[in-house]
Length: 91
Image (spheres, rainbow, N blue to C red):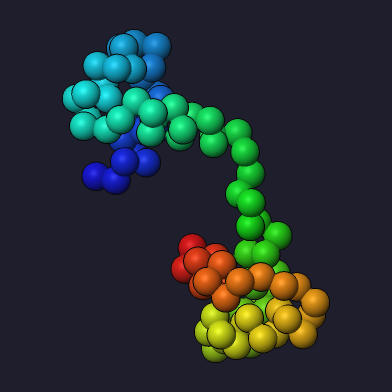
């Protein structure tokens, strides 16, 4: 089970059991759990980029890879690292 799923279970039951006990039970760190809780209310930092990439992927029938998408974004005036584009496309 991924740590993110474990953190969600701990968050759901945080009023019933002690967080430290649940973290020990699931073999996850408390700091990781509190980092997860801290990020809950925040939107994703690359949401606008992901939306732009998704629109272009729909137009090109899902044929653009991250390298071609990088070149297309550069021509549009949107400058990002190719690895960032790869990470966003994997999501």
